[in-house]
Amino acid sequence: MKIKDLRKDFIGSLSELYNREEVESFFYILSEKYLDMRRVDIALSLDNDINDNKLSCFATAKERLLNQDPIQYIIGDTEFYGLLFKVNKNVLIPRPETEELVDWIIKNQEEKKRNRKLRIIDIGTGSGCIAISLAKNIPNSEVYAIDVSEDALEVAMLNAIDNDVKVNFIKANALELDSLEGDFDIVVSNPPYVRELEKKEIQPNVLDNEPHLALFVSDENPLIFYKKITELAKSSLTLGGLLYFEINQYLGEETKIMIQEQGYQIVNLRKDLNGNDRMIQAGLIKNNIKIYE
Image (cartoon, rainbow, N blue to C red):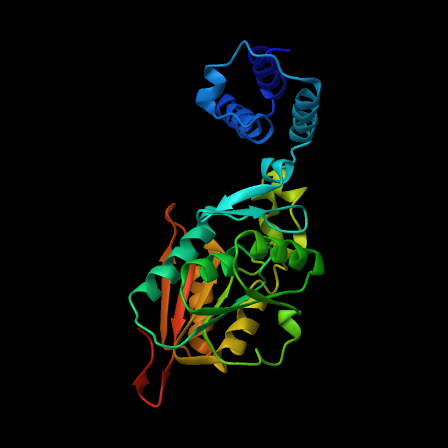
């Protein structure tokens, strides 16, 4: 089969489930993965033949897309903050909003000059995208990452190796911790925050494939992870230390108020590029000394 015929068949088969632009995007992502050909290469090679092995790869990917499997799980990796991360059904697919959170942390640290190691802990690390991106982009940092899922930690460990960074991974349930066992300059978390009532807003490819353990919380106690992590961070933040969260866009003010009630005098709520409340940065004032910058 020629490339032009494969493309026509692929787009036609998926056109009822996805819009054309999305299907074309899938085709070119798969072409780069299976054929090592970019979009421009495809345009110049439409009459080239494809061997049966490659055709089989496309056929399998097409069937998985018809079942609404995420393209990232199909190819096995995704890009995040300029780095490549392995992903599978044991971890959430990193989102652009999380990149914004990582960028906020990195840019904030670039403004500061430190002579000592910066100690960072990422709670609920999943694929390790936050912890690894911070380790890669913040010089002289010592990074720790916690997750309750052993399967997720296996993925994160491979990602740390692939991206040539050292991260200290810990298997633990954040809700059961009494302390973070150490002092940290940055505590960051993107915990589960989608309420059960919001499931109707979730696309089927997410709802049916990504790990619910990392996504959902009860309607009755949607801030359960935020409350616990805020408490843990309060006793572990160093002088000048900061707490960062990715948050539920519908619970921005509620999350901010909860953090303030825990004793954090400086709480900044930030919107993402789509205009949704998405991130929080919090700092403390101790003994009348402002340690937030």
